[in-house]
Length: 409
Image (cartoon, rainbow, N blue to C red; front, side, top):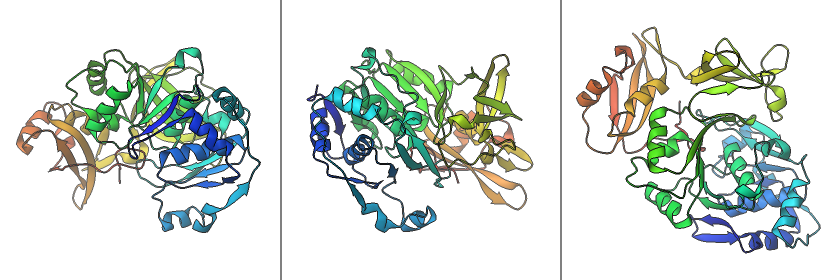
């Protein structure tokens, strides 16, 4: 078991076994309270070491600027401070996992990086980070494509799901499309959890990848067109859509884009906005309702049914674009654009205009040459005229956040 592969990292062309993790953990004589590095194995080893020694850890993005650190009240000089600890003598993977599970009150501080990219501090206990982890024999042979930023909530949840089942992790985060597909084949990856943007950048897929048994999408709005394309390329995969946040971790899941609230003591909808109960939240999250019990997520929804409540997400509350007095949902326009067979990725945003308030702009990545006229003709039967972008820019790539989502300004 200790020789089982723990991690393959394409960025360094290195592989690590569970035996390597155990040997490195046993040699530790000091634990750092901050982790700020790009090296994936070092990040994972820091987390494992901190949990095992019950030393609370602060995870920082390696590209945080001095100004960002100042805004977070972090002096860069403290990042290298460490605490001396007694060395372990762990002898097996089972013993390692047992050691980690015995610290449910251990705390990890991380920072949000949503579509606006503005960091916000959140503190989680190990018990909340692993709330959605499923440990069983049927998960023992899972091989995870690691497609998230390792210093953010989604990446941490995949990491703990894999680690506590002694699974293999294969880094595919920020890899080029051809590299991702190569790694899926070479390592027979069975599970991939990623943003819809990550999955869209894999399309179009010309062949099938039968090793993949489970696809999980989260972090952005999901649509049936993407679902159909993924299931065609991954014919043996079950697909699920999750709703999660840095503040609370995974909260809801569905097979498509319709979510159901099974426990209304934990989630509710008020004036078309989703609220979650404070019991689900990490520390440091501002509560916004008068009774102090509920957190406003900022996610607007369409209620489909009641008793029990089911709904679909519309968009973020602060992302609607005012065009001549009309409210435009950028997700709706992006979804329409991405139905065109030559459109690989689309980003809709507003540009200030004295007459209309905003004019609608589109940045579009295409797979072949496509004219604005052809695109407008394609959109005409799908969207109202005010939702069709006034200016269309064909670009080579679209900027993403640190977590791999479209970066909305």
